[in-house]
Amino acid sequence: PTDTGQRQTGPKRLLLWHQKGGTGKTTLAVGCAAALAGIGRRVLLLDLDPQASAAAWGERYADALGVQVRCDSGLDLARRIGVDEPGLGAGFDELLIDCPPTIGEHTLDIITAGDLLLIPTRPAWPDIWALERVAVLLDDLRRRGDAPRATIIFNQVQDEDLHPFQAWAAELGFNVSAIAIPADAAWPALFAGGPPPPLIRTLLMEISPHLRSLSSADT
Image (cartoon, rainbow, N blue to C red; front, side, top):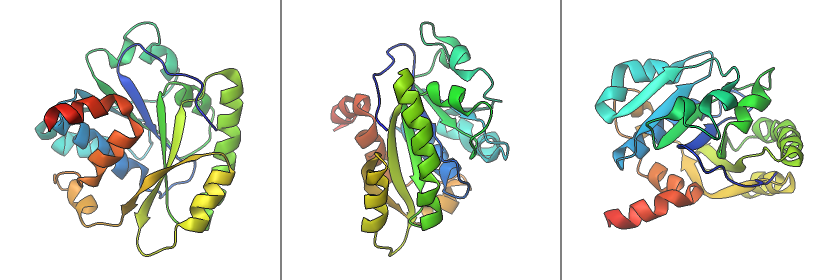
């Protein structure tokens, strides 16, 4: 699955989604939001996951980090965000969307709302097999001209050999990030108000070319 062009209006929209739960999607969404705010970006994190863990984090720690977090149903999201007008993301530089870990009634509409799609995946075969349905969905959107640029990020990595998992994901047509997110004590600490691991900023620079000039300006 490949992208078919980038939307130009309003904040950059990064979706975090996998149809399978337990991949670390919400934790990565929170980490990305905090890292973006840390480089001076105005960040809105939309929590569409029924568990509302990102929103619970937001109630406790988002203000101190400069992030705004809102719960949202995801209903008619693409229209409300606005392609030709600011819409829901008005006043923000970056809009992160923590998607439900399902393929449901509103999944297509939610996915078409994004510029970038980050798919956290553990180095475990059930996570890889679940990518098959994701690939089918994204291929359908690509044919319609609505597919965001999608990247697989291996998450919660310990000492696994990633090569067979990376090869399988590549066979399905996915871009695979060169960065792997290790299991790290910094992740639980993030939900106690701690900072995101520094590797998240590196990941964001890799998947979001518009941020690289900001990084260069900082150095």
